[in-house]
Amino acid sequence: MQVDMQAGAGGTRWSPTQEQIGILEMMYRGGMRTPNAQQIEQITVQLGKYGKIEGKNVFYWFQNHKARERQKQKRNSLVLNSPPITTITLNTREDGPYKRKCRSWSFEYIEEESGSSSSFKEEETRTLELFPLHPEGR
Image (cartoon, rainbow, N blue to C red):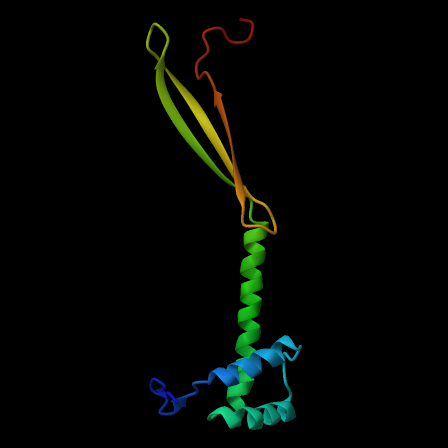
């Protein structure tokens, strides 16, 4: 079993075995989120059959696992609720007999469908005259 030294603490860091992690994850999936002191003691005895462990290791494992799961859910909800990405591109080209510069704007919307990783792109191009020669009816 591998034991790492903690920086400056002088103690040893707990290195859980695969069996210990498997049992802890099974308990977590079974609904145990915050075991009380008696449950921690029972779990510690059970996991002690598979390697060195202390009650504080069990306590902190459940705390950390809960925190990481909340972070993961928060990240996933931010990705699903994020607005579509819009890319705007300015294209310049010379047009007509007087080589007048025309500019066109390209808008690209990228949306992700919820529940799937597929995405689609829709592109719309519009040309706007910056200085019209005949403004609306004049």
